[in-house]
Amino acid sequence: MAGLVKAVGPIKLRDPSDDSFAALVRSIMYQQLAGAAATAIHGRFLKLFADGLSPAAVLALADGAMRSAGVSGAKAAAIADLARKVADRTVPLEDVDSLSDDDLVARLVQVRGIGRWTAEMFLIFQLRRLDVWPVDDFGVRKGWSTTHRLKVVITPRDLQAEGERFRPYRSIAAWYCWRAVDTILPVGAQSARVVPKGRKSSR
Image (cartoon, rainbow, N blue to C red; front, side, top):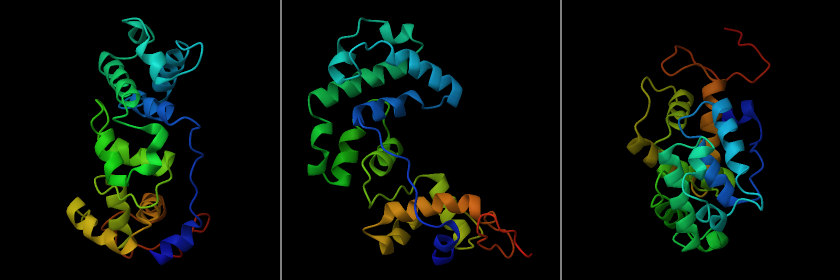
C-alpha cells in the first residue's frame, strides 16, 4: 500500500453537499441510470420544489408529481419513504453525529431503495466518516487484489479481515483501493507494478 500511496498522492474527495437529504435523494435518483439521463430527470424533479427540496416538501407533493418529472415508480416510492423516515427520525439526518457508523447504516438500509453500498458511500463521501470499509464494493476488492498481486479478486469476507489493520482509517484505505484500479496493472498481470501517473513503466 505504501507504493500505491506514493504513486497516487494525497487523498482527494469531492466537496460534500450542503444538504444530506438532497444527497441521499440524488443517490437514489442516479441508481441504474446513465449520467445524462439521471441528470435530466433529477433536474426536472428539483423543479417541483419552488421553496427548496426537503422531506416535508416531498411528502406534500401531489400523487403522480414525481412520475410527471420522469421519476420511475420505484424511485418515487423510495424518495417518499426516505422523506418519511427522515421526518419520523428513523434516519435522523440532523443528528447523525450521535450515531456510530454501524447504527447509521442500519437505519439507512431500512429506507426503500437504499442498500448497504449506498449507505456506505453516503458515510464516506457525504459525512466524511473515516472508518468505513465497503467490502462488497467490487472496485475496492479489485484494487486491493491488484495492489497485493493476488491472482483472483479477494472475497468480501477475506477483505473484511484484511481491513482490520487500517482501523480507524479504513475509508482512506478504500479510497486508495479505488485509485489502484487506475494505477496498477490488472489482477493476475505478470510483474504488476505501481506506476505514478504521468510516468510510463520502463517494462
